[in-house]
Image (cartoon, rainbow, N blue to C red; front, side, top):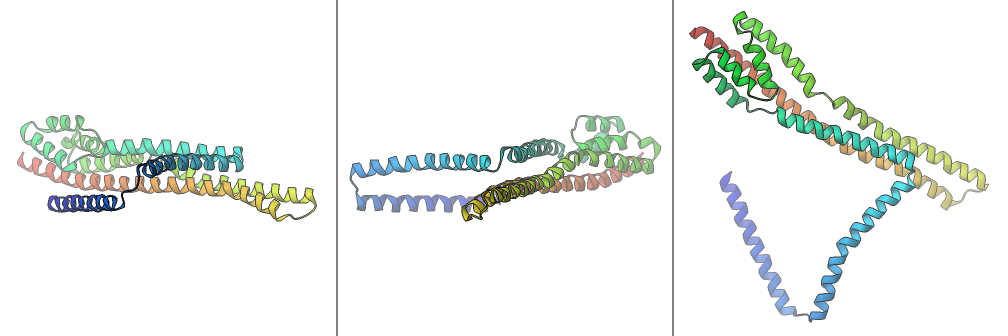
Amino acid sequence: MKKLFTLVAVLGVLSFGASTFVKAQDQAEAKPDSAMVQEQDAVQSQAPAAEEQSLHKAIKTKFIEGGPEFMASILLTLIFGLAIVIERIIYLNLASTNTKKLLKNIEDALQNGGVEAAKEVCRNTRGPVASIFYQGLDRVHEGIEVVEKSIVTYGSVMMGQLESGLTWISLFIAIAPMLGFMGTVIGMIGAFDAIQAAGDISPSLVAGGIKVALITTVFGLIVAIILQVFYNYLLSKIDRITNDMEDASVSLLDILVKYNLKK
């Protein structure tokens, strides 16, 4: 891996040097006058700002055209959904544990200080895996079968905590397109009301009403796509933590069996 990283870095440096050389050579051959260079630099420096301003203005305009009542509800759906997503990401990152290191520390503690020392290691380690281990070690004197049952039971409790909040994210994923479709339907009704009031079908009137009606659907689908990506990421992270919990629990039972046999 280090060799691959070194190779990529060397190739990057060589490519950067070659491009710099070609650029310098082209500038030396072209030699434009200083006035033209200053004018080009001014245009290039103003282009990103104008583009950013136009993008912000376009989003603001579309938001207003879509109707503040429906667009605001879609925006609130996005805000609440992202708030839960951020909280879950932080929680799951804190819940991740180096299970191999934890198992090694517990095994060393059992050999040197007994069960109480191993329980102290679990108390000083954060995450659901350490909590499950503590529940198992707390019932070692009752036998391996009781330890296994306590690990399975408390593992279900930890799984519930890991999956907490996902139902709200899935609810926001479902609500966002529905709000968009509702805005579209109401916008279409408004467009047909305008046609009825005018007494004539005007292409500009119909096109304008349909465009405004579809804006809410577009924003609702965008919000749903964003939240769906984060939702799948959270599910994959929960699956990794769950697999680590199951593998580590089996390893802990093996360690406890060896510890009881040595006793």
